[in-house]
Image (cartoon, rainbow, N blue to C red; front, side):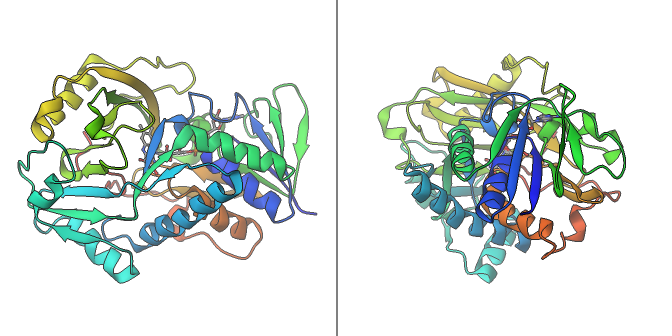
Length: 375
Ligand SMILES: Cc1cc2nc3c(=O)[nH]c(=O)nc-3n(C[C@H](O)[C@H](O)[C@H](O)COP(=O)(O)OP(=O)(O)OC[C@H]3O[C@@H](n4cnc5c(N)ncnc54)[C@H](O)[C@@H]3O)c2cc1C
């Protein structure tokens, strides 16, 4: 029986652990807190699932494949996690990112429609088409209950035989060692070690290059019942770096900036949102959904992006059998089920990771997240 140690019980770690266990591997997950703890990037109340990724066919197809994976997780767990509310992209440029996305979606055979701004407006109780040239509609997109999904997947993994150890894995011990040393001194050896350690990765592997960890404040606003999802879809204003969705589970309507925040320490940084972030969300509401500009804030969260220079993830073997799986760059949640399949094939020597995921120097670029304007 092959064995693996996975460091980190965020969505990437638990999805991979479950997948490997289902394939017959003996798997141990090492997590310093709890699966779904509020400091991890995966513990947001919600995350968007969308296939559009501009011209990038690889992520487009991976997101669409992952959608089937989410349905399978729901079936196995007996619980709804993915709310298929659809997603509207408000395109401000007639031939920009959204048009490129539509072409890629068409090539991949993924359902989508191009709408006049007025038609998009009919999806919302109140809407201003200010600056919108057209809308791109993804009917198969939506919102996933994120933190709950981590907990559910951890449960499925446990049921499949995965052992969870609450401990901190210490900085990578020594070359040639296929294992991790825990803060209590115990050594866990395995055929494969995967560091799915999110924003904590640079602590352990400082040499992996320029990764930026930034503070991201999210806001949910109290709204009338007419704004409830799935009647109100998810939405992204790519060129204005804003996104959100209708009220899910009574947590209010999410309306948040996607611009990158201040540098951030995921372990000790304050989890209090800032007044300037709230002002940004309200300014956006005033512009696009004017009746909500003064709505009360009912729920907030602070999370972190861990961004590589070009927004592509890191999937790299740093030593024999020792892998990094990170640098999610703020767009990794939706992909988790499909990424777990991909990673399991890599660990089983059946697939090579795409060259773009390596540890080479990268050219600065953005565009894979829901944000066309990042500062
Ligand atoms: C505000 C915000 C909005 C987002 N929106 C979207 C979206 O709409 N759609 C989307 O697809 N993605 C979105 N993302 C990105 C998504 O949340 C991340 O891609 C994903 O959660 C990354 O998961 P992870 O498992 O890599 O990391 P994490 O969830 O951070 O998990 C890493 C885990 O490793 C543990 N760990 C680290 N080091 C050690 C150690 N040495 N020993 C033991 N344990 C350790 C940590 O405690 C942590 O639990 C968003 C992110 C943010 C912040």
